[in-house]
Every structure is written in C-alpha cells, then in structure tokens.
Length: 191
Length: 92
Image 1: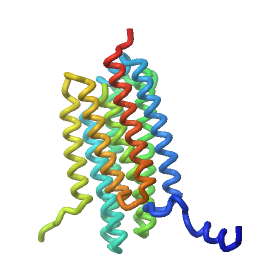
Image 2: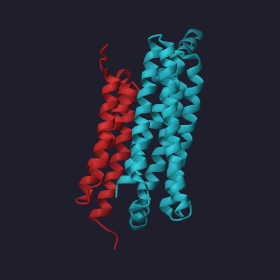
Image 3: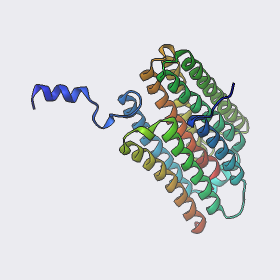
Image 4: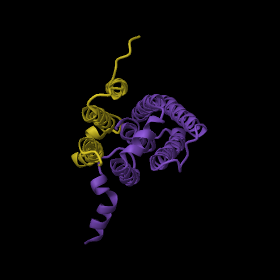
C-alpha cells in the first residue's frame, strides 16, 4: 500500500460516508441500539417466562403519562430536525430557537417521567418489588439518562449552530426518540 | 402569511396521530394477539418515519436504512412473537 493510498483512506469514512453528522456519533448510536436491543430482548423473554408477574406489574403503570411523554418526545424530535434543517440553510438564529424548543420538550419529558416515578414510589413500588419493576426501572431509567445526556449534547451544539455539529447532536436525539417509540408499547401496552 | 407544511411537519402530524391511535387500540380487551400486533405494527411505522425523516436516512446509503430498519423490525417482531406464544400457549 502506497503513502497516497493511506492518505486516501484516512480522508474518507468508508461505510459511514453519506450519513448525516459526524461518523463517530453513528458508532455510538449503533452501540447504543445494540445495548437497548439486548435490554428489550431480556425484558421480552422474561415476560414470556413470568407472564403473571408482568401482567400484574403492568396494571400499576400510568399509561396516560407515558402516552403524554411519547407525544412530547416526537414533538421534540420534530423541533430538533427543524433545527438541523435551519442550520443547513445557514439560518443559525432559527436553528438555535428550534434546538432550544427541542431541549425544553426534552426537559418536559424528564419532568413527566419523574412525576410518574414519584407516583409509583409513593404507592410502595420499588426496584425490588418484582422482576417486572426491576427491569422497568432499569430500562426506563437507562433511557431517561440518555434523554438527559441528549439535552446536554443539544445545548452544546446549540451554541455554535454549526451544521455538522447540529446534525451530530440531533442524530443522538433521534436515537433516543426511536428507542422510546419501541420501548413504550413493549413496556406499557403489550400483554 | 400562509405556512406551507413540509415533510417534517407531516411526519410530526403522522406520529401524533399514530400515537393517539395506539392509545385507543391498546384499550381494547378482546383478541390480545391482534391488539398487540396492531400496537407493535404502529410502533414499527412510527420508528420507520423517525429513521427516514427525522434522522434523514432517506438520502443515506441503503445499507444504513436497511440496518436501522432491521433493528426496528427485529425487536418489534420478537415482542409480538413472544406475546403471541404466551397467549396461545399459556404456561401450565
């Protein structure tokens, strides 16, 4: 391999070419999707084995609050995508406003989720109540941490509103959105 | 001044409508296998819209669209299959 070949390889991102944002964010997103996929798979298998425990646990969950959170998160994803579109066309002021709106909706998601946790904990439910609640708190808690991290990432990229940075930040945010879209029916609705 | 709805706006409306449809369907008590199937199919449609329009994979290489869609279908399909098995073949 010649020096020219090496330089050419370093300049491109191979299979990551053509994806929005920084390719390294896609490496992170892929690993996160694998982790969430395994976690959800464990939840599904455990439900199949302990159907009675999961059925009674599910009745204690607040489906309405989780539904509100789904609406809040898809609206937040829309605002983030509008922010990325504005940044791409050089409308940096609009991009910052859209991203700020997306972060505010992300904050609303966190508050609603904490209210939901507070109701459950005040009702005597905890991590060790049953295997259903152990997996429920771990899965939704892990996702909630990602929502908080996503808000921080959006806040960082919002400062410069540079198109590539905004695209990179919103890729993470949409991954968080996608995971919730799958997690919501599996945890709250499917029997 | 009129505001023309773009693809992102239409995607948001579709996602909101599908979320409300999910909540309405999930309340049904009959035919749990069918209801679970509908709820999970709606989740797959919503996830696909997020991948194509929010994540903008519509213009990305087909490999990535395929990988992300495969992740989505694998989880949703597995959830439905496990739910169907536990309803149709209840534990003794």
